[in-house]
Structure formats: structure tokens, C-alpha cells
Length: 127
Image 1 (cartoon, rainbow, N blue to C red):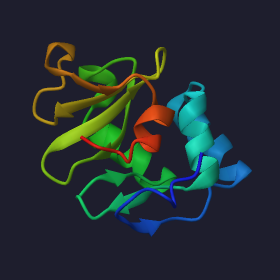
Image 2: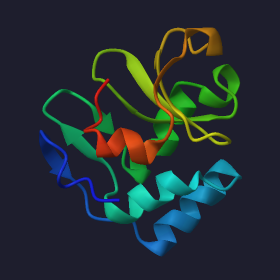
Image 3: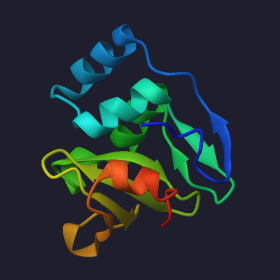
């Protein structure tokens, strides 16, 4: 799952190491969605000219704790944002990708942007 060919990529971080990945999964106390793990093995976060930011493993824990994702959007993981107050979430169970305002992470406010992370990436991370 390569992100380097996405139009408008301005920064692509080096792939996550096995040690970083194991530590990340320990911090979340659960297995990360496989599509997200595959993306991390290709790029440990990236940003686009459009303002879309997909967090690095270093940012992921802090952003999820700050936004209290486990409280307000249980079963989801905030993997990035639009640089405008909306978070990009993936579901731990279905791997759907959602966009939601950071001030109201109620599932009723979720906007599904893709049925999978792989599909969203392949279509250029369009919001």
C-alpha cells in the first residue's frame, strides 16, 4: 500500500519499524486494523497539499488521547485530520474511513468517506 504516488503528497515519513508497531499496539491495548498496519509499513504518516495529515505513530497516541476518541468515538481510531478541525477516523471492526468534527465525535455526525482505508488511499485521500 504505497502512498508516495498519491497526488499532492508533500511529506512521507519513513516506514514504521517492527518495534514501533509493537509498541503502538501495546499502547492501544488492541490490535490495530490490518489496513492501517499495512499503510504504516509503507509510510509512517504523511501530509498532502490539500491539508490532509495522516498521523505518524508518534502523533497517533497523543492525538487520540487529546481528542478522547475512545470515550467519544469508541471502536474508532483517529488516524489524521483535515487541518481544519475535522478528524479522519477508521473503525477497528469494519475499517471504514470517516470524517467527523473534533468538537462532536458522536457516531451520528460521522460522514463515511470510504468503505476501506486501502480504497481511500488509492483514490488520493479525497475528503
